Length: 452
Image (tube, rainbow, N blue to C red; front, top):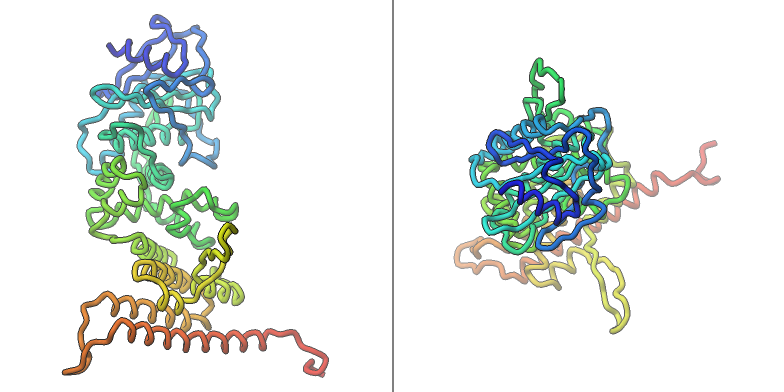
């Protein structure tokens, strides 16, 4: 039966496999079936070159495997691959506190004709569930091998209840888990042929290397982690380490591992992973801005304020302005493209509906919290002042109405808006005066004012 499944999957992938030319090795739990060619058998082309999807679903590896070095290389042999796959699964089960049950078959086909960067997986729906066929080159980097198997296992966990198609995983999840495995594992997961395992590789605190990295550059924001495809080149290199820290901190939350299991299970039920995330982590976050605030505080606790990492005074001014200006698209005429503009916080408070208003204000508060870690000391009172007004207004707006004095009615929403806008106006005036003072003190000397 298993041989017939392999042949069917091979035909689905466009491979020309003959039963007598291949042999299979089963892993300890019988979940992984590793197929390798017998000595001297020429192998067919790759599924990368020709794929007939049929009822299967093809997706490409590599979300978490970009930018790897090529120091550790691995020659794949079926017996060693079967043991390595089980070790990688045991690591994932241990980290998730997940029982070893309910897994679907994963066929691993070692193809000597594939280039080192050519890896694919085909997920095929059968009556009893999905079966995965992973095609790997015979020689590849150790990290790419372990990452490919871990990525397949994550897809298997997330899609156990998926009926129509494979649910895509967010890039930060795959990348973060691969990096987490590299630092948290206490054993050598990928076995090399003819390699004696003398001592286990002891895992270190993963935040040690991250602290060193982020002492020079700030981690990505939650929004940047969520959409890595839009990152500018100077920030793209931070994605892997930022994703690792994000996954590490999620697992450290109270019931963090249970939340991660729920997140994987919720993914097929939602079109956007953000909805699945909020459903799974509802005890910690009610909306995405709560995640942004938590992430900013996490970064603050990890890296602190280091004078060598502070923005320049001009950068601090620009970042403060960016945090206070809300970008919008305005349609001036029908049939014309919208024009980019910025609204002040006062305009947001007085003109926007409560839902949009709260989202924009909470995002501004999160940006101010993050700015505090790197702003120049002279600007900190302004940064703290703006954040205090925003958070105070939101707290009063969302709290049950209560009177400050006996027999006096509680403040109306309009009074709260006017009070917040007056405080913001006063801060804007302070900001303008301080800005003018800095510009005057840093202005180049003229002939009249130059020292004699």
